[in-house]
Length: 145
Length: 145
DNA sequence: CTCCTAGAGTTGATGCTGCAACTTAAGAGT
DNA sequence: ACTCTTAAGTTGCAGCATCAACTCTAGGAG
Image: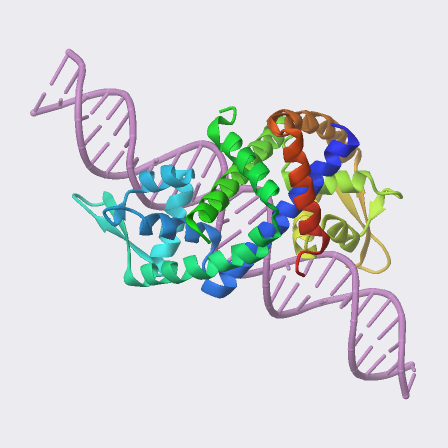
């Protein structure tokens, strides 16, 4: 790691952090949900049958199930979704959006898209999009795991 | 936001998250410090007089002072640094690294640099470095604030 | 049928982050 | 000297992420 490498890394991390912070804050202010909650809502919204299991959600998002469970608890308390008991006690089979959750995500997708476009996409040149896109694919593709 | 835009954004965020997660975990396992602690330590290490104030630290890192204060509390408890009382009670003037803190950061800079190189830099093509570098500068330069 | 293992889901602990409120010190103005 | 304002620093709260431990179910081996 040369000094230039460190400077590059530092600059990148700062930019990333700043971008996430701004996008998060906008999502919070405009729709009163966090980026994680947004992810859950969007994934559930796109679910074929309208219901998903915790593990499916976690795998689809690439998150840990513990994290998903915690989020579901908070979101259920806020009335965005329901965990349906199936079979015996303690065994939940399906997570479904409530009308409130569905309405919220539908609005958020539109509004938040505009924010992302304004804060991020509009500031990216086409070749930058290309480069970042290629890197993203390489990174998520099989990243040394 | 077209579908392609959303796919780009989603892919980017996933890649970013994954990268940070891996880098963080490595830093935690190898040196038992978080990325934030690393930032504090490096900044303090580079301080001219060897001492900095909370606000200087916060501005230098681009963080909020509350965050810095919380981190300092934990790091002081772990013996990495000291907050020196100056003047009357409750008024702290200088934050200085302890020998333990200095030793830790010196080792971490080297070892962590290798991790970053391996996990990130080695996977970046030159044009990707260029694009990200340009974006980072644009983003941190004056990003709509 | 019984046991036992594997997986799903939850929960608790701990540390991190953002925000807001609070305390105290320093300085300006009169 | 006294007050008022401002800045520095701390603290508490709530949400978020990670990890590990735990419960319960289901399904198979014997």
